[in-house]
Image 1 (tube, one colour):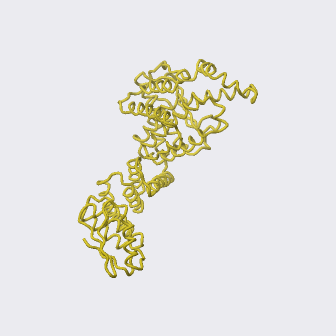
Image 2: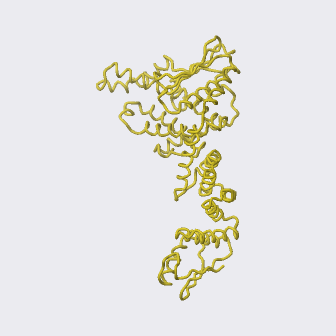
Image 3: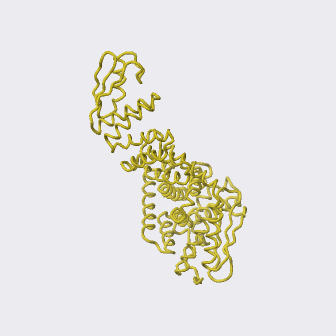
Length: 445
């Protein structure tokens, strides 16, 4: 195939054949295959072979025309490349982009999907397909295909910034969907289902005096007490906080039904273990704090860290359930987890507060945060693990614990099996002596 590039009005704005020749050579220098260039008095002829490599050069020529604001000429070369080499996913994607610009959404989507059949990891095709559905007015479908794209391209190296745009698009779509969705029916439906399951009422109320963002007080197996869920009303995502606690209650009910429910506590014995391990460390601050303040601070560290140990595994399982059992909640889940990631990154940055905590406690807490971050990355394709700036040994430990968690999920776990995982993780983190897991009495509902 011979393509003629005239000297007059050429896309390189060259004034001589020599200059045009020089710029064409540079334009194709990064390609493994380069078209044969032949100079004439007032034009240059490019000979492109009819092969896959030749069509790649033709796509590059189309890119040059597009950069020169000549989209019609660019599309002409893209189409030739696509027709000659249907496996050229870049050419197919670029033709799809041209259709998208003309608002030919159906044809654009068809072409983007063809490109993804050839290369499921091509970021540009995922981004184009997302835009096509969104501009067509199908926000829900746009979110689904965008999420598919961020997941599939998790390990992609994209120097163009297209993947960053894809991630921003995912968050933007989630925000739009959450703002337009009433989640109260989901809450009410799950609440009614759980109340019917064990005949106990569930009381949900705001309480800005609680220490954590939301709490669940499970009613005893026997008796008429109600389950109580409390949440801080001044926090964002209160609906999501409530739903997480309802699903945690569902896990308790299922475990009770098998007679396998247990209680995880931070007991007086666990506190004594904490004091024995870290009493000397905290005594070093006796000249900086009053005795009463130091004791309160030490107790706060003990309670906060043990709370993380007790709930870490359950929280991950709850998020897994939400993702797979309640796909309509994924936009809200994405926003909640994104915010949680940012808070975690802030919390583990070097600070005066962290200097007042035992390093082994800080390290174990970081490991749990990193495992959660890695799992969320695989759910939505948003990976910020590297921003925690861990070392090789730390990441190896994270990978091992993460694989253990995935093996648990894939091993057909039965209700109540999660308590063994809670104990295993606490032991492997080096703090099995800071929590107590024991059987729950009266397990007949």
